[in-house]
Image 1 (tube, one colour):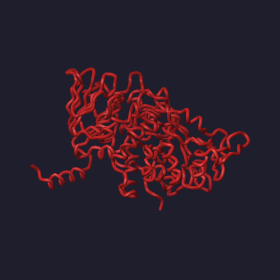
Image 2 (cartoon, helix red, strand yellow; image 1 turned 120 degrees about the vertical axis):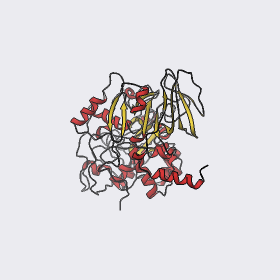
Image 3 (cartoon, one colour; image 1 turned 120 degrees about the horizontal axis):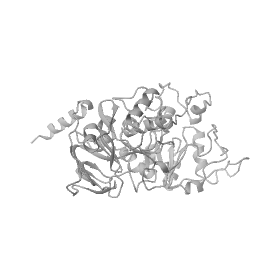
Image 4 (cartoon, one colour; image 1 turned 180 degrees about the vertical axis):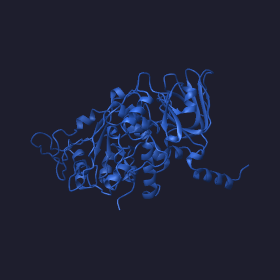
Length: 477
């Protein structure tokens, strides 16, 4: 028997080894028909099964989670002892049509309000000197970038069919039984660069109580900045009495739409009293730490929000100032948590921000976001040779990915596994790992996507290490 000290030494040594030194975990695969059983470490909302099993029925729903799940002799079986099974990640905030180019080198300039970098106001340098790319092939490439990191659903303003679930488009739900998310970038109708500090004289068509009340989920940018103008936005969106004087041409009055359907994206300028109101109304928050820190030098007071029991999800925002995928956004959250929050956020808390919490924010928790009976089998199998469970998932890279399933169907994974489960899938170029993509019939092929990306010099799918010029994840000096 190995002593406790020896066991600890082995574990520490394993943790310190570079990921590239690990041999790819071996899996036993029996391809069959009908149902599928996956055996690995299973991350459920209330326990970790190490090991455990998940059974997926022929319709792509989970119908058993436990130590053992009985199945017919003809079932497909995937047995991976050195792997961990997680719900697919859900990215609740991205502007996918701006993710085609790489981030610019950090200039050190920090802003007090989003309109300063959007419009070059208050003597600041104009940062947004680029245009969105809405070509379907470009959008598909970016969705593939998310997919290779384990994201299976997103709220991203635009969509490409056939890869991720696009939770803000009815045509992009891919069979999920929810109403689409309503996504508002300028809920105050302030896109021309309007900033106010003592009234609500923004655009003529702000979001109203009735608009949000009729939405299944309303995700909106609120208080993106750290000055009084950013703080004023929340006042205009959380009170019917703050400003009761209409302006000529429409708008001008405050509205109160803070309610359970509402999720406030960024919310950097919110005060403790504001968080009290958000908690009392059972609204939620979307945290994008990398983009907030690189633009404003500070981010939402995530610990104050957690102390009040507010549901918090994580979003990558966009490539120019945020993260290239949720893996890198998690990397920022892990770093910020350690460097500035004294590890107050557990690995489990961070994992929930991209799984169950994210599903709740999008109004989709009855269908996705957790490994539970009745949920759709949107699942990701990550290599976990050190058996670290949630810790490994939160720190996973595309190179750690083994399989991605959406509704029980393999979409992407390590070549040796995919070949045994869905033959004739296509190899894709990801540094440090052999992955294959299984596009839906009639959808764009991996070869077409890679050729398009090469012609247009699109930002790569992944890097073997920290991406070059990645926006900083540090508070302002």
